[in-house]
Image (cartoon, rainbow over all chains, first blue to last red; front, side, top):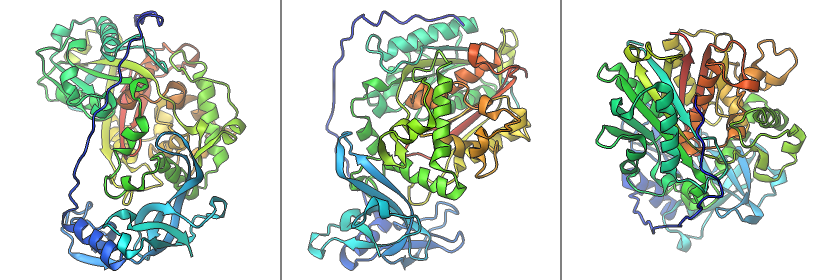
Length: 157
Length: 382
């Protein structure tokens, strides 16, 4: 192979910065509407079940990604679960230190094997263990917006 | 494979942490010049072009409009694959396999140093209603996966630190690896925690570089000097959501490898493949990928550094220093791995050369937050 020589690194270094405001709308859809309404109005985490594949989808999905069937069966998976994994986050999106560190958990809900990623709270990172039981801490009813953040975080029980 | 395809030329610029002196178009032009010279072709002969690129990494919408001129592809068929460069190579090889094309060029580049807010670009890749509202640095996904993998495979943080230290030390022998350094596992374990269990030295740093690969049908390739043949290739994605994916096994690597091995007639990859250039992001990914590639049984990849490594896999896996040593280059990451394998098969890797390398495998992961992986198997003889 012949060698390619880049220009002298002391050559021109002129550069410009550019950005644009991007705003998008994300439609909740048939399943999403039901899921987020249940979060907001009933303090429930709902999933849809594919009995053929033995999979429960949380958040609810209208279809099974494995067998492609339309899903009609809805299940309340409860708001407690088991910690499958966790990560302790020390820097934010701007790479600035966050104090105290944020803790994120991968939580298996109820007996459904459905999983959710959410914040963990009311716990020291040194006390966290895989397999630990956790429970959702809900936003006060008036503060709920039909968003995933209607659950503030999960805490150990 | 029903139509043989070979790589007859690769051009590149040397990966560097920053390249303020040259634009991405100029880098690509330099790589293209080098590739066309090696393949002994003119871009006028090329029938179709493929670029692997992602708009948000380029800072430009509809980036495929910006790709032809630096390749000599103006007024030619050209399309962009929004995926790793190995996916681009597969897209090009498939075109040749139809029998409708003989000569196709694939391009991928990284100007990662120009992405001023990379974490925000990464965050924008998360599900907008389920995950993004948590507003947490999304590298936590690697932290969650590393812990889940370690728990499932009974792998320790020391085992992962061994991978990082080994690859960075190997990179010091590779002229194309800007992050080579003699680092001990202890130093990895004591580096700053960022997304525990991920620490600072687990994190791949970014590089800038451009790669241009010339692919040809057998009709053209057999007339060229030292063509490198594609004997197996595949890519796929596991479940896209964080909620439904497998957090312990790289299912997409496993499925892609099974298909590629079948095409190449490989039954025992550890014995039949001489050199592996695979994704080693965050250290644990190398172990996870080696198991998915069936080089090791599940949970056994940590044994790579044990005494009695009779198959010398610690030498034959990522002799380049991997992505940790060379740098993360977004869509171009896999193309560097292809370059390293091709160079090995041609016996051109100097101090990092694996003796008598005849068969090599390059594997790439599309990066956080994806579950997409691609595999290509290359041979220096048909």
